[in-house]
Length: 168
Ligand code: FES
Ligand code: FES
Picture 1: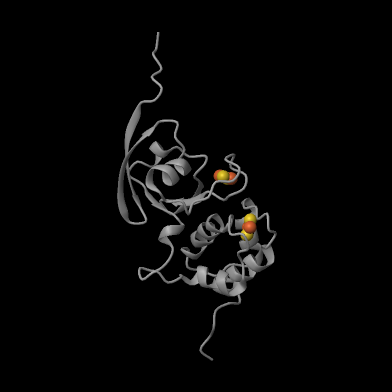
Picture 2: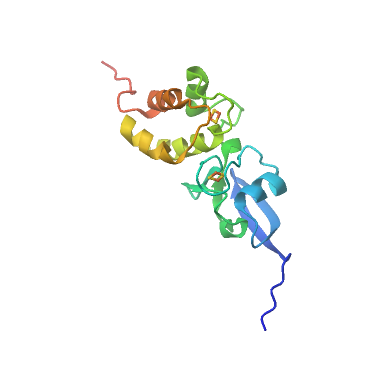
């Protein structure tokens, strides 16, 4: 008979916002819980814990994932980026954060870290996006404060198809 040993913790090592993280996690521990409770990276928010609301979105190897649907042991040797890693090294807002600030795109702010991480994934592609593409990318995020218009406007300011200034 196979013995199921609950409570065993396994070593897990990955890079979080460029810094090495080494810890231990039960194999069932969610990445979102590991980040928040073991690492103290509480900027990643947890809403539904069912992959619906998008609040827990982080980047794993550059791709947005629901950290409530991923196990901590699955990010072994991965690059994980959270909202804590978005600002510049001197602590000032990056372009997306500044645009959110200027557009008043955060109300209670609960959804904001996840939305910013999804938008950062778009921005990392270094091209312009149509409003439809931005709306499509944010389709998996729920904002209970219903501030979608300002969120879209902020994203369009940074990487909207008509946001780039020309020299002439
Ligand atoms: S908490 Fe992960 S999608 Fe809602
Ligand atoms: S700003 Fe409150 S949930 Fe989005």
